[in-house]
Amino acid sequence: MAGTPYVTSASLDDRLRAWQASLDAHSRPRPLPPLEESALLVMDVQRYFSDPNSHAYLPALQAVLPRILALVTLMQKWWRGSIYEGPLAELAEPLDAHEPDLHLKKQTYSAFEGTCLASWLRKHSCESVVIVGVMTHLCVETSARHAFVLGFEPVIVADATAADDEAHHLGALRNLSHGFAPVTTSAEITRRLGGATRAQTLPAPAVPAKVPLLVAGGGPAGMAAALQAHRAGIRVVLCAPHGLGGQLRVAERVENYLGFPGGITGAHLAERMAAQLAAEGITPLPRAVIDVGRASQGWRAHLDDGEVIDAQAVILATGASIRPLPQVSPSLLTPYLHEGMTLQGKRVAIVGGGEAAFDQALLACRLRAKTVTLLARSAPHVLPRLQERAAALGVEQRIGVEIYAAATQDGTLTLDLSDDVQTLEVDHLVACVGKDSQLPKLPHTLRLRADGAIDVNDAGETSHGGLYVVGDARRGRHRQAAIAAGDGLTAAMAATCRLNEGNRRGRG
Image (cartoon, rainbow, N blue to C red; front, side, top):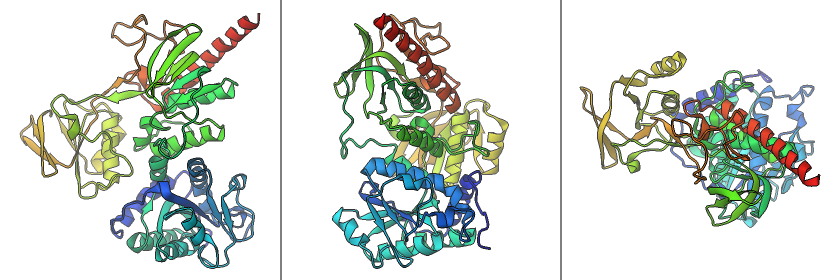
């Protein structure tokens, strides 16, 4: 029945997993085209479909609209513009706040029929189009087929399109994935664009010689710190060499971040955080801080490109690095499984018994790995629900097992193990045996704790005033997105008080 709310904001991630599983049986392997040369085509996202008082109201549009907006925000930032398409009608909130490069007025289901879209795309060297909007089985599908026939590469975003019922939506996705276009997710688009630097195609923001506050790190702690300082009126530079989101982007599911009943994927939570910074006008600097030392009026940070920034205060939210496996060459490890990987038919082994290991195991199952084996030296130390979920999905949990050696031949990785099975052949090996704080070079005079970690107070401030360490770089085993964000907020508030007090003394 038209208007049936087959998906809501709370259920979207679960329904998306179901759609992806259904598509696996119908899709032909078709890689995503290079998205750097794509255009964003937003189909019919108007009040005609988004207003509950309209006879054509689509409840499902309300669920996907935030992800459409996130893609618009990301792609406008990426290309400095986007393309809207639709008949003469007002755009749905909040899209009407965005100024497009091209606003087409189509008369049929296809955005290419009787319009200048094809010539505009060729003029701007766009070889592919990312299509979002409504309805999946009408304008979206027709435009995607037409794009394919005209020689463009269409890309469909499953969780940024909607129809009047789930059967129409899923049926269109099946048709398109079988013969015309790859069907992907907003998280994957964001990972490929928002999680990478664009130093090759867009000029990096200018590096200031001096700034009141420098924040190093683009994960939840760094983003929260930068946002809080910006809100307080402090000029802040956010250094994020790998884009925004940090390791949160590879989390299969975050269930302890308040405000998301049923949980949210790490990639989607990261994209919401990044969109909030973009809305505030905070543009990260794609540079790494490699050295922080004392300066005459605070701190001097050396960046990986040789530039130098003097700051009155510095917040280090540089995260943690994966602890290596002594018996395995780093070249044989897959650093992290992520949404964009193709694991169907692949054998995956994950070393570790903590939350990160189980999170990667669950992601491997969602990505349709053939087998998923978890190797742990001791009993897992995770919530029972994670163990139960992994067991229900067929994850083999082998406890009391260590890897003695690993070697690869013809693309197959063979592990020598300490148990009765003795060997295990896999395609991917992921190490989740712990992390070590990842910090730049710092003054050797900083006070340390008994375990060798840098000593900080409740606000994350070190023994040298004005230098803070927050998030995963500080927390040891307590590495959670919510804790990291709280660390960033606390440090930014403390730094703001320090900076304001210094300014008052300077005026006095």
